[in-house]
Length: 151
Image (cartoon, rainbow, N blue to C red):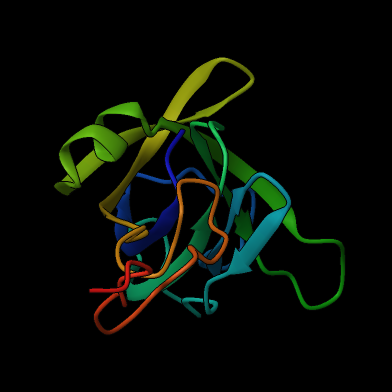
């Protein structure tokens, strides 16, 4: 079971389909891993090819292995529009430690509607000195041991 920190670098997107006919779309991304959620900045006026170059950290403490990226269009006078989503399987990242910038398909209603580019890095929690395999403190007997035997 992986334990550690997952860093997600949200790089860019391209080919996003917007529903705003009279204006450019203002995309942002909601990144979620289990119950943790982060929101990118709004790429105002960026249209269908936004650039973010933002980093987000998630705490990994179980075997859940999917990252969800939900792409939205910020609207000022109505509810934000859902543009699509990408789901990234994290098994390989947990095993290898990192994935370079990679493009993932953005899908809405099972149809392709653009791509989103992210880089992923997993840093395993170090269970070394002072910790047992369950994350608790190990008993420590520093120094040298006195002999109970009398000479």
